[in-house]
Length: 461
Image 1 (cartoon, rainbow, N blue to C red):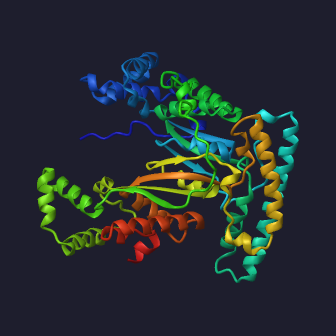
Image 2: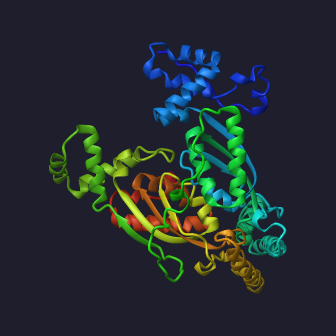
């Protein structure tokens, strides 16, 4: 056995020190790996050859990835991007990408300075002045709520450090910030996923998204021109629902509801585990299951979970059980929910009529009148922006505003979700959601559902 590191991510300033910039491209790795299946040469030799002949490597990529259709070859090339000064609203589009990694500046931990994105569509118009005025109202309200929150928590003898107290105040004050608020994030993405992201950005129809697409595409093609193609969106990507008959209905927030689930989930997991071990057909698995009473089934799950640590994932057999929910959450909560990209998340657009979430801390501050005054201005400007272009009003809505969600995940993903989001350290809104989902699942899984809990409880157990 021979194991070698073929490459790894390093900072761009170090790459810039390479004398021959022509070979400073991930295309050589993808081209070398693409040739593995059709060459007797060892992969190290293939990589060395690709470095010597960059143009041939690019031609090889072009042929294998786009002509022959082996798109997975492009996944061997990985890029790191600093995304600075993008709006929280646009981040929701960026982070739809499943096969990528994101780390974003958190409004829970970082005090905001009032920076925000002005949609280029309104620059120079009367709406721009209105936009600045309403954003100023939101930012001033944020500062007020943050300071009053600190004072209130001190009076309540908050149990925790000064840093924790300030964090608690700012994580609820941020509910009043606009989705136009600037943020920054680090993104790690392979070339295949990047092409899909570029098409998604192209389909958005807003100038901010177009500007980001142009910058990402320009920078990647300067380094690896053979790996990214087909970056323009098709008509069905821009609005795949355009052929649906019109459906006029009242806009209202969804109540939490379990829409669908795999029946007899405990039994399905046991059969899947038995299949992996013994390779039995479905009829034999049913006969085997009939030999196990509830006590025997309980004993198995007790033994399984007794061997697990909080960082372990449950077996893949748990993926045989699915759950589908509908609910509404604030933009704050959605910012965390959307990170569970292996689940299926369908979302509505934002709309004032869906309402907004008001944190308990803000209710206790007795600033309801101030909040209502700001939200009144927010909603008035929302409709003006929407009249100019559908969707543009989302920039002025706040982190508190709701959107409706359909959330589908297999049980393995739900164990990960609940362990992270029901934990005592989780943000309060998504923790409350997670605990409710947890209970709904436990009603359908009387055996293994007992082990669905936050990390803090699991460690104690």
